[in-house]
Image (cartoon, rainbow, N blue to C red; front, side, top):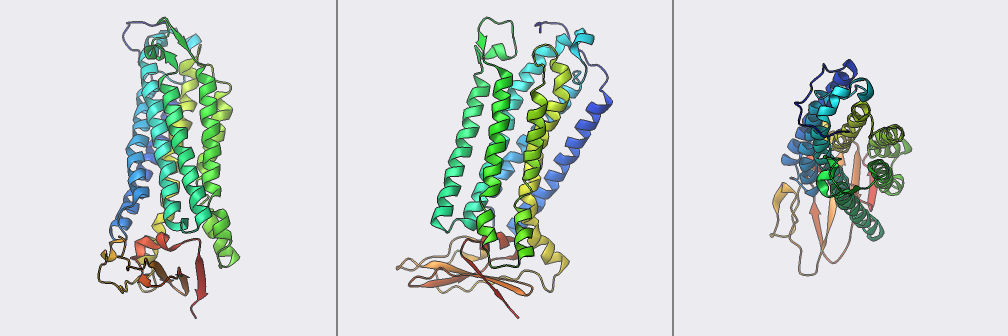
Length: 356
């Protein structure tokens, strides 16, 4: 790969490359719509939490990935360099984009992982052991993100050797780093997906309902599948002699991951909106009954506690099912939230009672 000051070459975009870009553009639009609905549901309900802010931060990063993919698509990805040597004029520019793209990609995935875990902490974090597991996985995810951002940033010494290969210095093995990043990403995703399964399975619900909840929390497996396809593909990638030929599929799959992640973690949040407007007469109904004057109101903020340090008793009614979580101490506060906040009421101590 020679460095050159020749002008960039823009060959016609291949049909498959156009298809990859169109697919991710559609996914980007879908993720925007679903995220907008999620945020709207939060605003009319319990208000935005840390999980929402993190997914909001991940969305523009994921969309930046689609923009990077579009730029690459105009530079000849999909064409084999041995048969199109003129594409060597684009290599330095493409490597600069890849350098930035990797860091943006890692920030996006890290934000998505932490968003899911903050969501878990809010709905499953009342039990001590579960809470510790969630916090430990948060730490693991943060360390994963920071470690690979550092590795991607300083793979070469000096750093500019990453996009100017003829610069004197040395570089680590890009392919090995990519493989380890994808494999560990899959492992952390599987851990995150598995975290709530034991709690969900032990809820006092019908088997079909438990399986439905488990499926909703397992949508992220789509991202795992994308990661597996990517690791299989990059094992045969020739980054040294045929960068343009290998980038088309690699970039396509890598940009699918954050987009699918945002979609999969946001879809379960839309159920209260659906129930509220699809069945307005029998949708989720929530009420506030405050026993203490120092209340944060129905926005989802904490209700003031008594001097004795009371905890909350939450009541959730939906159609013919009533979910009640009791955490008894000296004093009780009865708190129930707007329909968009139903996820807040699923905790590890749930007791479900059929309400005739």
